[in-house]
Amino acid sequence: MFPKRKVFVFVATFYGILLFYVVSVLLFPDWPLAQLTATFESVWATFVFLAFCLLFASFLVSELTYFLYRRVRSTRWFRPKLGEILVSKGYLTDKKLREALSEQGFRIGEVLVKGGRITTQQLNQALGQQKMDSGSTGEILIKLGYATQEDIIWALNRMERRLGRILRDKGYLTDHEVRRILFEQRRGPR
Picture 1 (tube, rainbow, N blue to C red):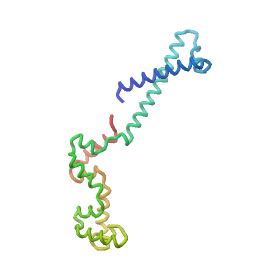
Picture 2: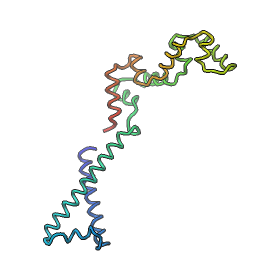
Picture 3: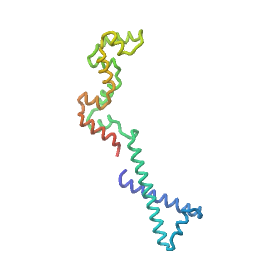
Picture 4: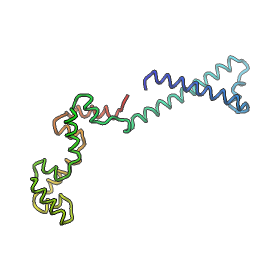
C-alpha cells in the first residue's frame, strides 16, 4: 500500500471510530466508554485524552488493516503468473511461452519420442499393446524392450519439470534470470 493510501486508511479509520464513539455516547449514555468524557474536570484535558485515545485506536486499526492487506496481496491468488511476467518484461515471446507451456502437458510416450529414446512407431505399437494388456505405457515399453528403466525415470523427471526449469533447459533464460523473476512473482504486485 502506498503512503497516500496508508494515510487515507488512517484518516478513514479515525473518522469511523470517532463517528462510532459519538453515536454510541448519544444512544447509550450509560455505556462505560461514554464515561470517558467525565474522566477529567477540565474540558481541554478530556478533549486531549479522547483525541489521544481515538488517534491511538485509529493507528492500531489502520496498521492491522495494512498488515492484513499485505498478507492477502502476497497470497498466490494475487500473484501474477510467471509467463505473464516473462512476456511483459520482454524475456520471452508469446510463441516461446506457449511452446514451453505445452511441454508441461506431454505424456510419457511423447517425452520419450521427443527425447529420441524411442520412435513414434515403437510408441504406437506399445499403445496398441496397452489396449490389450493392462499396465502403464512405461511398463509396456520396458516389456517390449523399447525402453529401459533409466529411460522411463528420465522421462518421468522431464514430465515433472516446472516452467522455470523448462525455460532454462531450452536456453531461453539463465538460472539468475529465473531466480529473479520467481522472486518478483513471490513478492507479488506492489
